Amino acid sequence: MDIASLIGFIGGAAVIVLGVATSGGSLGGIIDIPSVLVTIGGSFLTLFIVAPLGDILGFLKVYARIFKTFDYGEKTLIQAMVSLSEKARREGILALEEGLDDLESAFMKEGLRMVVDGTDGNVIRAIMENEMSQAEGRHMKMINIVNQWAGFGPGFGMMGTVIGLIGMLNNLEDKSSLGPNMAVALITTLYGSMLANWLVGPVAQKLMAQNAQEMAAQEMIIEGVLSIQAGDNPRILAMKLLTYLDPKTRKVIEPDVLKD
Image (cartoon, rainbow, N blue to C red; front, side, top):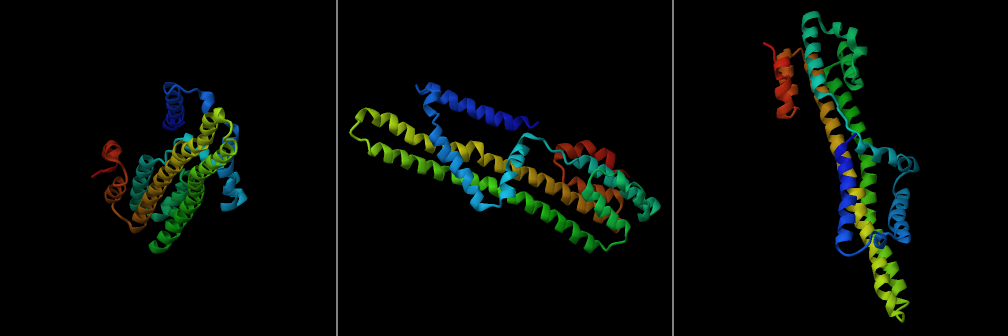
């Protein structure tokens, strides 16, 4: 469970409630069902114009990813790569075939299988980079849908405000209702802003960060596979892969992988 996402959502709600309470208002004063329908419902339904039905139906699954933590095992990958490199130099490339099925990373497994099969390094890089690019393309397609929803939210909020103002202007003779009607009209603008800046917009940014982490791990795997294929010294391979880690993590595993 990603605690940071929970803090963001729960903390955001708490701040809004606190802001309403300290401004002399009431929580019921910012809750309006027609505004919800226009702003949230309208902006979401617009996505069906933008993207295929299947992508929209898979939206909730993508949204739920921000509550999960993902560990792509960079430390374990480096240790495994160094171990495989040592084995390849000691027993030959064909010796790697024996333990391929035990590898957790399917991406690394397929890359090493091509190495064992004697595939040229340039071909291996092309295939693995294309697979990585296709995966990132699928991720970005869903992230773009999230971004588009965040972009539509404020627009529908303004539409709701205009609808409310039209209704208010049609009843100008009832001056006692002007204040309450104006407040209701502005609620849709609030909802649009909340959608873009709290409920949806930040989700796209979190998904982008997760995608970047996964792509970095796959880049590291490609570098390791090609290093093994080229017959690099295990120490050189380790030095290459350690550059993908942050300084704190790197310091922890350096003694294990940088062997003389």
